Length: 174
Image 1 (tube, rainbow, N blue to C red):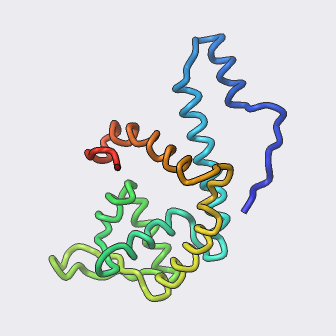
Image 2 (cartoon, one colour):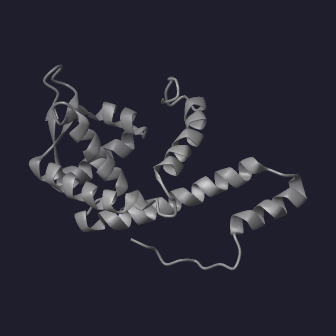
């Protein structure tokens, strides 16, 4: 799924970097963060476009995938927020929408009777399988890269940032 290209005659981030350097000094960090933020915009737009036929956004798709990874197809809302690294309000909104679509149901947690679980429905499981096939066939919108090694290099390059932010404490993957 390709967006309409901007077709600018120059790289605006590189141009900003040159102007930045003249005014405040070189900042590879500014170049990196601006590139990451732009990449995030591009990827979100393309992923959401790929998921539109399923009436999903990438955030809702991620929640469904997370539920399919659980042993029982159900997780407490707090755990969904923790695993997806989003605010509880975002989880509530995401699950509300998925429930209205018939992709999840809410039920009381049988362990404590107070907590709420989100459970994927058969319809939700079917849609996540179809959507995943589409995303995989489009390499999750990561076009422009030659092979898996380049994609894994991106993962590795962002690892220290995620560790420093406190997302997790673990040795790098082998």
